[in-house]
Length: 141
Image (cartoon, rainbow, N blue to C red):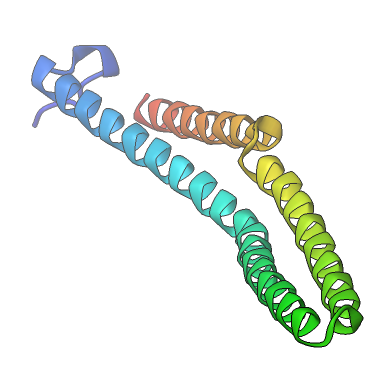
């Protein structure tokens, strides 16, 4: 019968195998961390992108209204132009407001304001891995 080896008496091949396993686990944890951060940012960017698309559609319809109003104004001399211009101005104002709000939200979603969460999450993952390794070493001793 052989006696169990102490932690310091393990062969080099076992140590390298453990090193490769630990490196692989760390790589997978980091990859998962970056994946979660990317998915969170994509989720935050959905609404601003929808607002930009809505603003583009409103701008397109405002240009159409403006052109139709001008055409009617030329046909009837002045009356419908006022209504066409008023609707175009209102449409462009709404478009500008939506783009402004969307840009603020998009810069907040993609900016560095959320990087503090990523750092805290990384620290938690590292602390958990260190605790696991300590528990393994204590169990082996």
